[in-house]
Length: 236
Image 1 (cartoon, rainbow, N blue to C red):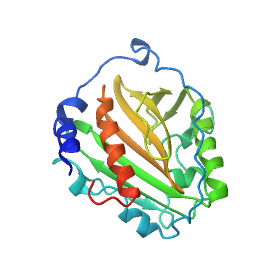
Image 2 (cartoon, helix red, strand yellow):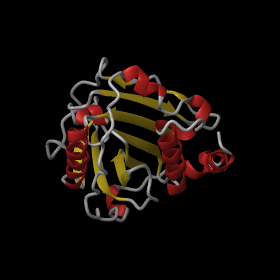
Image 3 (tube, rainbow, N blue to C red):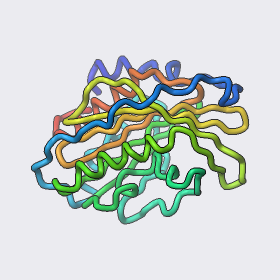
């Protein structure tokens, strides 16, 4: 771990943790989305092996103590399957791995980490042929903009409300955008900050989740580390 990343993430427990009993109506709406980000030209060769792609995602040694694999690792060989339906339909795609949202991917993989006080870090990536990457990047962003408010239910039929909006983050990779998701059920709110980044022919999605609030700097640091890994830079 680089010193800069370590300093940002060392305080992750404090930055991520809090509890909320507020209802969705007690919270201000997330900021509106800005323009759809444009992908950079992708002229390389896509990764075609999901195991190779997994090896380029951040591993436990790159993260602070207290974050361990959640066991929720998926790939093209072990897909998630159909997520629970939402109202409006189609919003169930939000936060699903990129490779499941856009099946043109040549390879994709996902890894999840659980942290203290119900915090988590989830990372997935998918690699595309050059002519398919830009359409995938655009389509994912269009899905988000059609789902600023939606609802669903868990396996026990408990209602869940979702609010989606924009998020300011520094530039990353070859092209990038970011968003935030607020998930509320039974009076508890989880906040997820997400970056969607292009690195060559690969799209990666980095999500940091915790009750009530997340320091945007945590997402910035984890995203930068993941970009470096995808670029082949040694270390996190």
